[in-house]
Image (cartoon, rainbow, N blue to C red; front, side):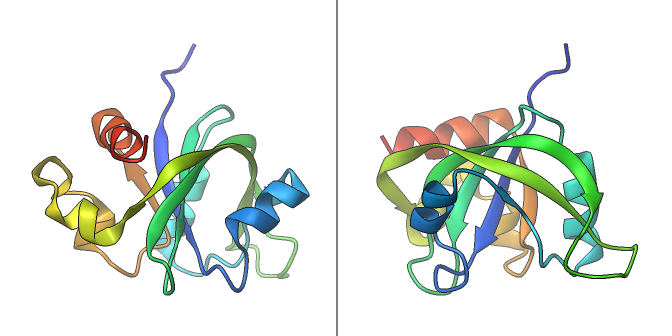
Length: 137
């Protein structure tokens, strides 16, 4: 059994919010047009855990999702370079964790959210993932 990997994905709430995601119950994660983010999508395995982050407005981690289908061709484009994964919501955080809180936390100083602000799909170490959950509980 592969060890669960941990990720963070960003979505602008007006485009696709946590509430809408929960309403849908499942979605494919499209719109990724950055090679590094795309490569991260390709690394995702079924069962991996994913933090759902509202970008632009809100700027906070609001919930946990999991990967329910591994990567396949992005149905929104004919360009074979781009892929999606299917995600399903697991649970909301009791308290959303803000970018400010994450930046202020020494143990999270290396997360891509802080270091590469524009990256929309990024890996997290298990302890970084757990720390953010702890901050949100």
